[in-house]
Length: 167
Image (tube, rainbow, N blue to C red; front, top):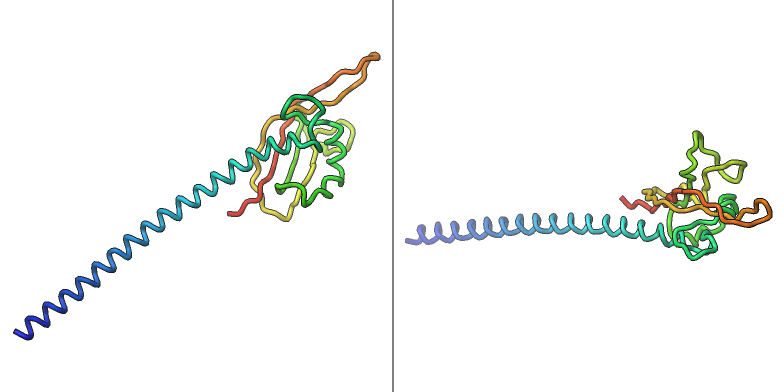
């Protein structure tokens, strides 16, 4: 009788240990799935932040053309900021890089501004940071005088913003 009772106690303890290990494995699997969802949510949030920062940067007074239109950049301000002046804004920019390309008229080679007939404005670039780039199309406008009248000339451009990549 005593040996049979001891055997049942041992079987019960092994069964309890097996059930505990099973639930521990199920709990670890559940935590792994939850952590994977958090990483996906963080990546989605970072992408949404990058897309919203495109419009914020395009509408900043430092780059925006003096008009009522959104997503319009001033060519003269871009020329000034594309020199070394943009690097002085190191703590101001909430991103890793800001670049603007002229998309139309098309170009064969990239000519960095300030230069005659340039088509690439490197406004800010923190090359020490690993970044993921997002882009949107904008208008690059300037006021020009021709035949005694002043008018606004706009070209199609592409604003490229690099967001710090934490992966």
